[in-house]
Image 1 (cartoon, rainbow, N blue to C red):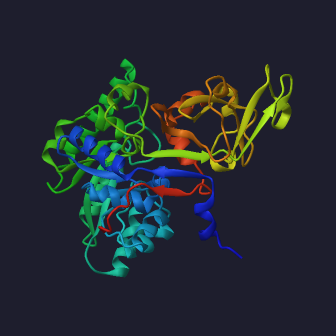
Image 2: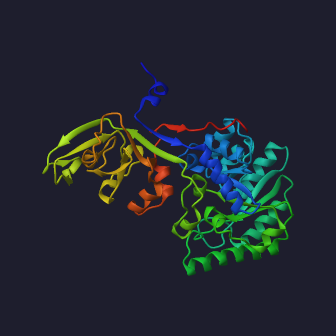
Image 3: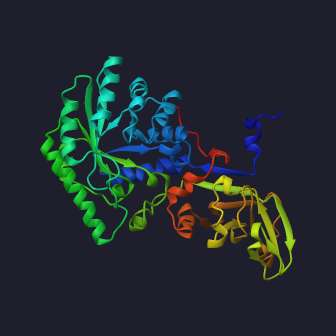
Length: 397
């Protein structure tokens, strides 16, 4: 029997990951950060791009460290030999504390319970003090210590010889928006954070970070950061996608890292007046030709993309997706190509996301059609789709 590893390259669909584009994007964003350290966010399997390969490429591009959401994401990076700092962006369950310390991950804390768990694990393990970051809720109201709580958490860390306060940060809720009220709220968050820092009188080696991708692109600054080493957290922009409409004008130098391509698996003539796919929801107004593509909603192509104007590139031209996207396949009306002398055949390249002969469809284009964000699109490309790196990263740990 042929095993899965032998079959994977033979599938007529792949997500190509352009690591040169990733490195380029990090360079652009580091320049925008005016000398701040850049931490690469590789949570959720690097937003669907492949955590290990992206982590190594980011470190090659001089990222100072990596950020993940979950303990197991950090542990997996350690298990493949990555030795760079790995920050857990939120406080993890207390029962994860020993694993966090054992694998040299940097925990984030914002409650006394979370802090006590890390401190106990550090005491049991012995060795050097464990680096800890404190997350402050400056207004997003998702997670983090309040301004007043942060003072007591920081004091507790600084009084515990098993711990070292390595960083303090907050997260901007609307830095991707250019509406006046949202700009005002971002300024308010920054001011709250700056005021807290002025009260804490921290050691000068504590890393301060406030800016996400949008904050980096808009060059959000707070005066208090000048006293400390400071960092930016590079998320979606590192992958060449926009953090939001308010910063679309700032991403011109960025390059999309992921493309999604397939091959035509079947071609057939269809008659005017007939319908296609589940529910027979699309009816053909004229005789045409339909190409079947072996990608579906189980691969991350949203089922309703056809109904919102979704297209695919074939022979450098936009062709409409017709009929409900099924679990494993979708259909494209290629009759318009016959009108310009192009005959589509089995094996022809189909680009769902990416560039072909000067035309381009991006994950942000899908997001606009589906009333969502590019993050959801790339994270949604399932692991059934093989990831193929265009340029292998070095083995730098």
